[in-house]
Every structure is written in C-alpha cells, then in structure tokens.
Image 1 (spheres, helix red, strand yellow):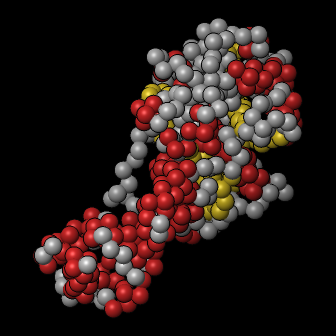
Image 2 (cartoon, helix red, strand yellow; image 1 turned 60 degrees about the vertical axis):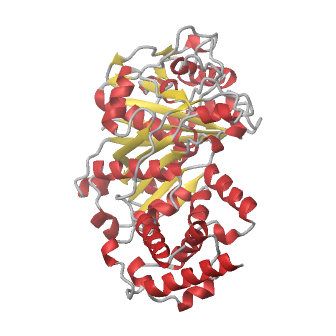
Image 3 (cartoon, helix red, strand yellow; image 1 turned 180 degrees about the vertical axis):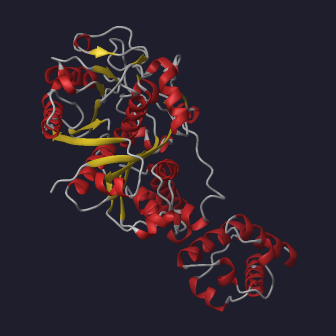
Length: 85
Length: 406
C-alpha cells in the first residue's frame, strides 16, 4: 500500500464514518480538534483502523498522534511492519 | 393535591405509517401492515410473518455520536418523539428551560447483544466491539439515548414489563404528574423488529403460520386464529400537568384519567381472566367511572387462542352490561409488544379525534367468548368520549388506561 493510498483510505473513512468535512482535513490540522474526538470516539477509531488496515492500535499510541500527518505516518509504518512480518 | 394529567402531543412510526396522518388513514381503511421477512425463513423460523416497518435514515438529522448508540427501536422512538414534541409545540428551548422527563417502555435490544457477542467470538478482543453496542444493547437504550439527544433533565427511566411495557410507562408518567413530581414527561414504547429479537418467541410456536395470506394472519377474537404476528416501531405520548399545559398554551388533546394494573400471580405465559379483570376494575374505580361510560375498548387481543378468549371473558365480566365497541388494532399492526401499550393509545386517540372506530380486521366468526363482545369488524363512524386500552404481558403483568376527550 503506497503512502497516497494510506492517506486516501484514512480520509475516506474519516469523511464517511466520522463525518469530517473534507475541507477541514489537512496534514497539519489537529486530529482531535478537527474530528471533535471524545474518549468514545477513540474506541471507534481503533475498530475502523483494524477493519481497514488489519492491525490494532494501542490506546497509548494515540498520545503521540497530534496531526493528520502524524496519523498518516503512524498507519503507514504499521502497515509496512505488517507486510514485513 | 392531585393534579389532572393531559395528553398534549403524539407521534408514531409503525407498520401502519410513519406519521400520525398516514397511520390515521391506515386505521380508517383497515389496512394491514403485515408481511414476510425472508431472513426468518432462512434462519429456520417457524413463521416469517412480521409487521413491515420502514427503518428511518437519521444520517444528516442526528450527529454521529447521537446515532452510534441508538438501536433500531431507538430510531423509531426518536422519529415518534420528534413528531410528538412538534405536535405538543415543545421545542429545544422549552426542553432546556424546563425539567422534562422520559418514561419509555422497552424490554429488549437483542440485535446489539447478538452482534457484539458475535464480534467477541470472532475477534477474541473486546476492544474491537466499538463504542456503540453498549448503549444499544441495554433495555434502557431508548431512554438513555433520547434523554441525551433532547437534553432532558427530569425523570429518566425505562419501564420493562413485557408486552405491557408501553402502557405501564404511560401509567407511571400519569402517577408522577398526578402527584406533582413532574409537569411534563415524554412517555411511550419502542419495539425492535429484527429477527434476532424474535427467534426465541418463534420457538414457542406462538406465531401465526398463515404465510400464504400475511394480511389475514392476525385475527384477534376470530374462531380460526392461530397465533400472533410480531411487529414494532415507536410511539410517543406527551403527558403534562393540565394547569401547566394551559399556562403554556399547549394543545390539549385528551385527559388520561386512570391507570389500572394488576399481576396474575399465575403462569408465566398463560394469561388468566381474574388478573386482567382486576386491572379493568381498578381503572374504572380510579376514574370514578362505570361500565356504561366506556365507549370503546382497544383490546390487548393478540390473536392467540387462550389470550383472546380470556380477555374477552374479562371484558365481558367487567364491561359486559354496556357492551362497548371493542377492536384489536393488532389485527392490522401485529403485536407491537413493548411498544403496544403506547401505540394503541395513539391509535385510539386518532380514532377519538377523527370520530371513527378502526376495525378488528379478519374477525369473521366469533368463538364462544368473543361472541359476547360488541366487536367492530368494519370501520364505523361514531363519537368516542371515553376509551379504555388494555395491555397484558408475560409474567401476568396487566395495565389498563382510560382516556377521556376534553
């Protein structure tokens, strides 16, 4: 999966399932603020990542994910690790 | 001082229509909402018959967080409540400024329970269930969701009393308001229609198997009835203290004048005559009414051989001297179970407002007990001043509500 494909897929489920305005998505935007995430939404984010990319996010990993770019990078690395293993 | 309790709004989403107007027309025409659900045949059900209820599309109306925890019956209840609040001229400003409560009847949320358990079995990891199922799977799913959506700050509770849940919810709302504890309560009943919730009931062979003629399958009080047909949806009735309703210029549709109740103290599923009779008697006594005052009885009659017969005996025993008109709207809706006690108030209210009595369709030949009742088999145009609505449930729980025109 290419970097572009990861970004496209993430943006797609954020728009479809989290009802994010596509215009508000940018690499440097704050993920929590843009998505208006509360603790329950993080639970759903774990599910949607697992169903789209086949790996499970650990709750503590979200601490380091501040921006959309952090999120794309994190998923890209995890997908690459999965392929490598 | 005891206060008077009035109905100021109603809303309905059922197999007879998605609004009060649609449902009124279906009732007048004696239109059945019963059909077949193919997945039940696939899943080995004895009967695929069910009320056909349209699932509302709430994306765009409710925010994601408001929808995630809303189970199927909650969606129906939401639709009914939006209509009822509008009907009662209650907006969000009123809800924010006043202490409004919610008492809703519901006694299952099976789909969420089975689906979330399926995920556990498949994934062996509870963190992959997601956040919504917990709020969808509890019996109180409707009240917990609607109280959040509508920002309610009064009494907030679900009433689980099997097929009398909706009726008891209204009855308890009546008690809270009558005794001065609340001024306005959103009351009602919701019922899921998915196959998950009906399998174990189907397993009791309680459902009609007349699948060749779905609209003929439910035949309460008829000699040839062979069981009930499950249905569902959502029904909301806004109850208010009379004085408060007058003060805010609310539309006053009718007065809820009594709440009769009883428990059979008998078999878990077989109803008797004595329990329902006591519920009827209590309702009459509490309202200070006599048998002759009741114009119409919306019967519980679900189309089961024993249940209908015993209810007919109870109605005859308590109201027989007057022979009020009797019909079971379940002949058109099927048994809306947890919702039925609320929806049947809405159906009867529509009849009272529009001067007709909806027919007990498929009533062709009486049996020994129903022959003693004045059962309406074709729509009749007549004035209703006072009606009584019965609801009975497993465990022998009974509820009878009496409503009076104002």
